[in-house]
Image 1 (cartoon, one colour):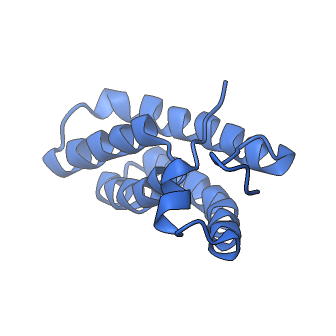
Image 2: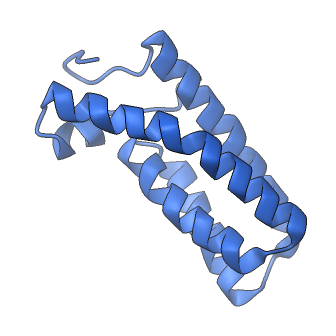
Image 3: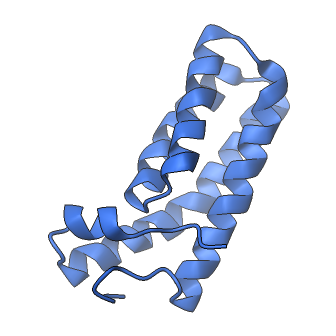
Length: 119
């Protein structure tokens, strides 16, 4: 399974390989922190913070072309604001963790390719 589609990133960076590389590095640095915080807030029942962290993480995954995951994070954010569907929060967090760890592996292995093969 491929998690990342870097076409959006490529268009945002105007095809500049230096900007693309910098944004990839930011994503790689942020993901472990997002995973740690999402799991901590979930475990501690700090749902407002969970929603805020989901909002921050959404931008990172969207720039990597992970649109479906971005939509899930938005749904989690809205649910935490409304205080609804608390039983779904663990699934959202787990899906984020699994997909982002997969995305990190893709980046590490050079599998996340742009349409013009810039890496």
